[in-house]
Image (cartoon, rainbow, N blue to C red; front, top):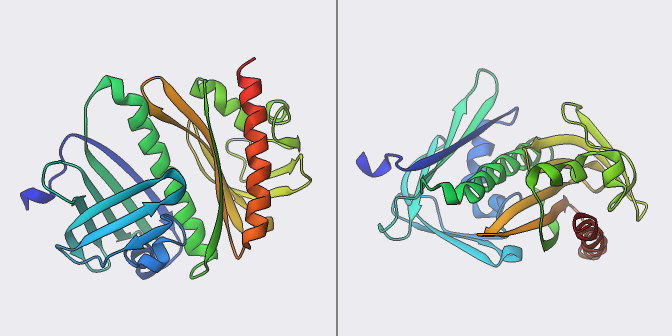
Length: 269
């Protein structure tokens, strides 16, 4: 089918999970499950020709798609609401020899050197999302989540910023009393300035972002960075807890907002 062909720049990411393929499929296609790991709100049934709406409240962003093709349990292809764009988002759920492989292809993106920052951010974002999806599928299936979110505009280079997300001395300048995030090391233990501990596995890592399991709150935390447009960038801490209550989420969010203020002050030095 020519309408399902990927054109333009394509980003391809994948992950393997021990969860059954049927659960991975539901996580993408059932609005109730989609909001437990990805979007804040979701509407629509994943049947060919239908319209879907995904809402990300904290980013003040809505995404509307038309289902171009849906093969139950295996393949979902989404396109723009109208045919004016070549954008496509394809999700493949496959048997990986005793595991389930989830593949995402995001295509129809512009080939423009001035957009490299945004494109790298999209790829990094999908890697973070799949890491969180795997964690949800394998540990918290069917549980509702409560989110926390802090973001600030900042001036930085990504290779500079990632050291403030990883190295013990630099983390201590804005977030922690103890600990580091070491690439290749399976688990993390951080002691935050507010006394909380973060302990868990590294779920995803890219040259600009890291997602870590936060076992103490049955959740995850992401240390993020992305473009806001030409010449503008932001630092962000986002996370959730499956079973976390609203008040606890607000306390964590306030703590992370203060931490980002300290990070920006350090970056500006």
